[in-house]
Image (cartoon, rainbow, N blue to C red; front, side):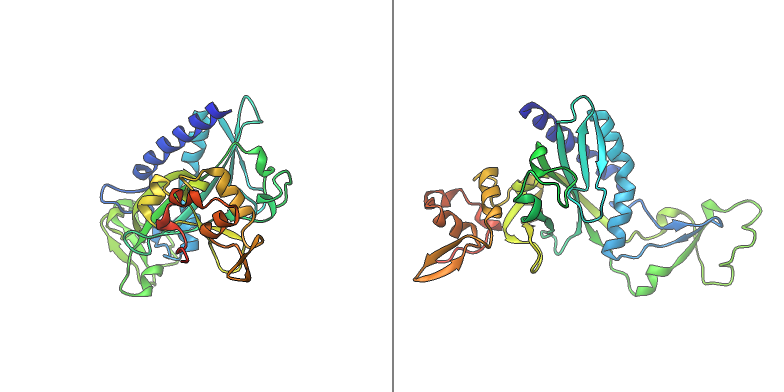
Length: 300
């Protein structure tokens, strides 16, 4: 089983290296320019993150299918919107061999920072033989991976750019466009598709086991989600809080997050940092194995 895991992870990393050429031009712009109608009008895309993420998923999905076929897997999609994971890869010759892959698409908060959630640390994460809100029980997967896409949003002068319509000369029909309902509306003429500004650019792709890019903080407010580390270089190299401690420590920490308690300075506190958890387990000798860059600040 370990051989399948090594082979799958290697193939996934090769695949993400190929994706950048598929989705972006030589200048780094997104190859998607907008929606086209039967009259060959191009409607630009909103830069709203939910819209961009959904279109990116649709854009890369044919390539994901080709990757699965090439690697000898079939894909099972999540049957419900809130189910984990987005994609289940099942080996064609042995359906006991399964890998979970979640698509994580986000924009840069700065040149070096981005972040997202890595799934729940309750429910299926704790009860690993159950199939609640998960496609197959958690313990049936040999590995849990994130396929990450990080991009830069293009700043427009005004919001009207989100609703522009373009007529592209290179798409013009010889005898005109018939009864175009937009003929009375403001339509910008351009020579080519490439001259339309893309709403996103400068992509970074990575694939990593989710435990290797996890932080020791929750990812979003009061919801029981595991947060990722934020540094883009560390996301791409899998240099998370637990990467030296190992997957078992990641599992045990997040299974007990917010529920394990300890006495400190005469007070009962909930264990909510990797430092407190290692102290709770009597393993302060492992402090040196924590990657501190993405961890909560250690209390003295």
